[in-house]
Image 1 (cartoon, rainbow, N blue to C red):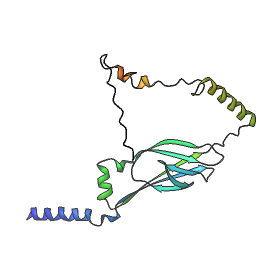
Image 2 (image 1 turned 135 degrees about the horizontal axis):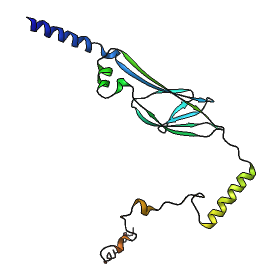
Image 3 (image 1 turned 90 degrees about the vertical axis):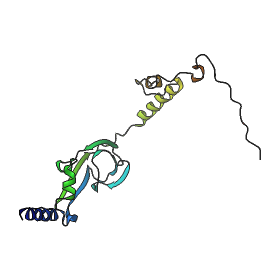
Image 4 (image 1 turned 180 degrees about the vertical axis):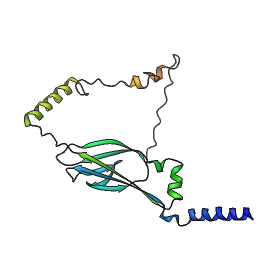
Length: 181
């Protein structure tokens, strides 16, 4: 008798927990504001809208946020969005499926935009002359930066792959001609 009462109580408590779980949800929202407002926002290279703007998101992690506004420097940042305690794996199953309460995770990210520095005509001409001189010298990289060598990244690749066959060369392949129409 005691076992049947206990099993009915456990079953009813499980039904109460599982009953009407449509109210259980986690709402995730990110809001981006800028000073001054009116900047175009891209998150992970997808246009979101003009600030102040809000959008919902599903997954936590690092996001690429780009802010673009005429007359201001473009801002590109990688921002990590960490999950709250109730979204830690394991706990998130309970909060999203069993608890009849809505959880809200609202994030606010603010940016102060820097006005674009207006270059004088003389500065632009001087910069153009510097670039022209460097191009004549064959220098492609900016001043003070050494070009990267691919040998550092790929040391195992021989400089001449055809000559690195234990002294043997690859036989020349005949050129196949396409049939004429």
